[in-house]
Length: 193
Image 1: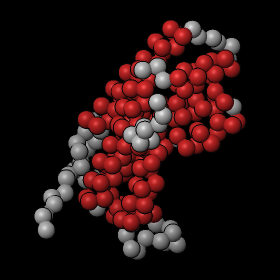
Image 2 (image 1 turned 180 degrees about the vertical axis):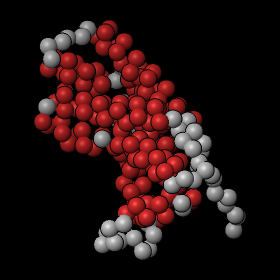
Image 3 (image 1 turned 60 degrees about the vertical axis):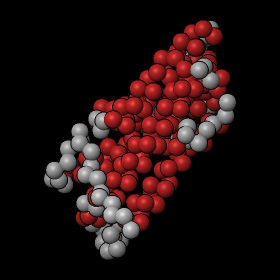
Image 4 (image 1 turned 135 degrees about the vertical axis):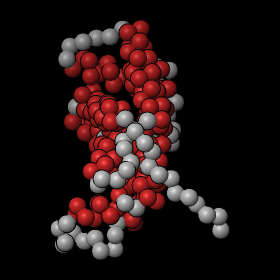
């Protein structure tokens, strides 16, 4: 079973979210002005941007963690190899049964993370997602050594996107707006053509 588009969602959507960020930057925003605080303040006040960015990022994160969780519960062979190779570097050896138990625990945890990313904007969940996403991305380096660095960098979006959401929510709260982390951003009302 190869990688599916859903398991690649976080790393695939991140460049598009960056493009969205650039698209919604105020026209007067320039690096020469040096006042990036006002640039981000005006960006965060743009409800359309906030809604699209928030929904796309959370769907991408949830999709990635859900599919990876499912694959881990199923005992996906590449995941077994990552754990085994990483463990061997520190002198540990796991039996197949132990590996399957470890993968089931990891898999169910990933599935729970995916669900909580979708239904809550908890800082704890986002921090956990960021840490776990970065740890699992870095497992390519612990398993493969230096040749795994490129794999780690590509997969860093799995945790990095959660950090971006934390920053986005923090910036919104810092601006004194009425939205709190536990509330969804106000939805746009779309008028039919």
